[in-house]
Length: 226
Length: 303
Ligand SMILES: Nc1ncnc2c1ncn2[C@@H]1O[C@H](COP(=O)(O)OP(=O)(O)O)[C@@H](O)[C@H]1O
Ligand SMILES: [Mg+2]
Image (cartoon, rainbow over all chains, first blue to last red; front, side, top):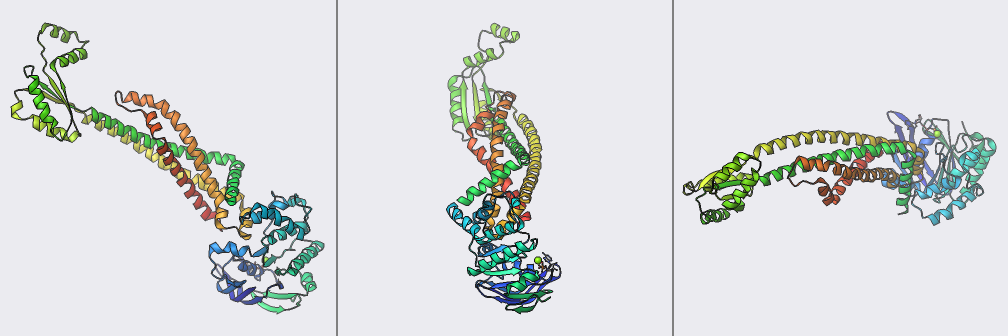
């Protein structure tokens, strides 16, 4: 589903965020990417959605070589990938329903389709009774679930979550992880970027450890190493 | 189509949310359009004035009183065959006298002199108009034929060239000032629109970020901002035309007075060419708006 071949990413002028990374993630997998801060985890996630270009090597997503993707094709790619990023918040002036609908609106979806899909997505994250709330009327965990619902509306094959539990307390963290596992059960490939030991150790799923831009370990049923 | 309506809704919303900014943008666009219209109007006034002065130029040929109508008519026929001649008008001696009397009705000396003279002292007159100013020389050459010296008492062409030169000078000067003014306004307008769109982009940066990550197309993201600038263009054009028409109504009588006797009515001119003026203004407004918003989008909206 996702394949990195000798990928290096150098930010201008000379920060090497990733160095010669090789990686293969199969469809339906649940992969955690761990490592200390500043080791290139976010960079890796941003490369998958073509938010950044590789400096060397190539990336293939769902059989599509996106190494030199054209500007005009990026939207098509992004509709196949649901993203849950740290700095990718909800719009404060929109309700829960509107926030989720927004992702469909901007893709030019028909109103009928929007009315159908939005409640479904909110049901998956167990927020079907909070449609008319505004983000600041929700807990941090609930807000993050809305973000996940928004990531689901295009029925993506891949979900990339970059530190989705960053600012949450442990109960909320578990809620989010359970939700990602549930989505993974539907067959969606999940890439979870985190530096939370407890989560990773409890998951018993594949763990890829990055250190200073390089993969230093890749284990099925892995543990947090560092 | 749905996307278009959503973009339109967005454009109106951001228009209202920053109503003062929108008002300032529109104000500067209206000023720009008006000053460009001023350039156009001055051009029209200048051209029309010069054209009507040129039309007034004619060559009067006065004959001795003894010269008979048939002789004059013969010369008239000859002149009419010339390609440079547009029109020849014959004024019989009686009519010439009437006109002369009427012209000098307030001059007692002339009236008295005419009383004393029993016979009509005036001869017939031919009034010749050429197709253009340069061709009067050709006509004069023909009239300088030695055969005619016995008959022609005087040839008189009014010196309109100085008037035309003076008119040209005045209109050129105003034209230059208005042109510089327009250019200044164009530059200011571009900067203001650029800035307005930049601020709108800044206000919506979160939405834009989300749009990008959920896979909105470039044009979906850019469309609303371009549409917002189109909205400014349309409103400004409407206002500018709405101001221009009454303004011309006010200044038109003055202009007509100034060029007394010449056929120059700005209001009619404006009404006759409404569609052209409208088209010109909206095209200028759209160009200004779209170009500057595209620059703003290009610089501040990484998609
Ligand atoms: N846009 C950027 N421009 C320049 N350097 C960057 C940029 N983004 C990240 N970096 C650098 O690349 C390295 C990896 O960053 P990042 O991928 O965010 O790491 P992580 O997510 O693991 O904390 C860091 O040294 C960071 O400073
Ligand atoms: Mg990070």
